[in-house]
Length: 112
Image (cartoon, rainbow, N blue to C red; front, side, top):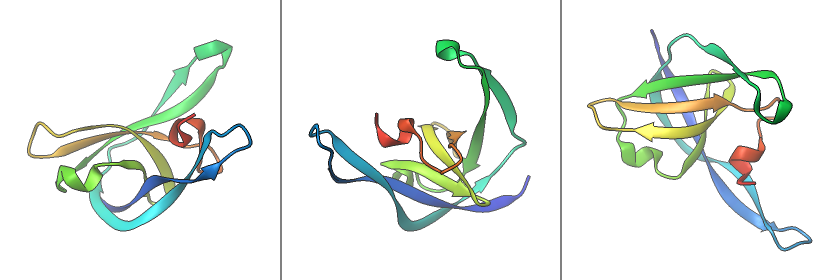
């Protein structure tokens, strides 16, 4: 496994829509962390009758957990992943992620 630079992104409210729901946008924080990336495994998701393959991965980092507070997504090797959970009970931090849709934005990150 190799170490890769991962850019971090946070969600920022950019306004409200016509029904007064908040509208969010991903904003690059300007910070990065180093992560180790294992091979990816496609996972079949059959929720609500949809059948598609999604990519879930776990990245390992030795960065401080405080750097990952409020992070909604990370970009590793040009691919954007939404952060599902962060576990920091060991010397290394595990970041569980899911690959985003083609345009780099999905409803999960948007908070919908």
